Every structure is written in structure tokens, then in C-alpha cells.
Image (cartoon, rainbow, N blue to C red; front, top):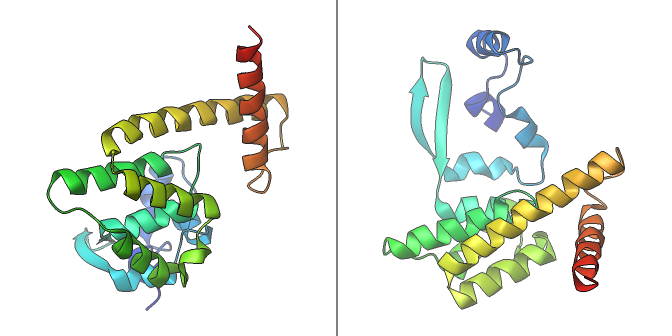
Length: 187
């Protein structure tokens, strides 16, 4: 049985009825995730059954190191991926179950084949975060940066519709933030 058949039987009438109720298309239940770079067919092997609702929806969970691996693969500087990583690390440290870089690397290698499959920025990010271990301070700083980045990108998209893409996002973000910094410095 495939990941899709096990977790997201998108042809199920109950899913479609729920979608109809809320104006969603058939197959609405998170199937887009399966087309992202964060998806790995190995997730089903490394997830744990949690619960089935109405004999229709099966929920599975993953451990923290796998969630971190997925967030690092996404590595979006304009969503909460990076602050989520710090939040997970902080929670585990605070509860006496700190995660190691070795656990995270193992999860990345299982899901994506190798550590180098991660974006270089994500590798630098996690290595620096694990070395500093100042998760409380880092969390707020990163969350603020993600919020600012999102606003910058939304502003850019409204001024230049259709130009922004995954391929040019980092460069656009870098230039837009540099422009903002230059304006602050000239005041």
C-alpha cells in the first residue's frame, strides 16, 4: 500500500463531502504536500499510527528529528520553518530530551538520502543553532525575521505580480532586504 492510499485516500466520499461543505476541491486533504521537496515516501515507514477517525481518516505522527529534517528541507525563510526547528529543539531541551545533530542527520539521510540533499542554508542554520543552543533568544529573532521576510515578499509580489518563484526567491529577498537596510542607513 502506498503513502497516498494509507494516509490520504483522496477518493473517499467522506473527504469529498467535507470538501463540498467548505467549498474545497476533491482530493483537498494535503495532497499538495506529496509534490513538494519535503515529501519522502519513506515517511510512512518512519511514522507511527495515532488514530483513525470515522474509519476514514488515518492520522500518523513522526518524531521530532523527522519533523526537523522536513522543516530543514523546506528551509523557507518566509514561513515558520526555521523558528519551528528552534521551537522543537527548545521544547526537547526544556523537557530533558535534547536532540542531537546526529539524530537529525540520521533522519535527513533516511528521508532524503544524504545530509547534502538539504539546502546549504539549512545545513549552516542547524549546525549554528546546535552549536549555540540559545534556543529562547534564537526563536524570537528568527520568528521576527520570518515575519519581516514574508511582508517583504508579499510587498514584492503585489508590486511585481508573477515574477516571484522558488528559483529567484532568495535573491529577491536578499535584494529587497538590502534596499530596506540602505534606506534605513541613509536616514
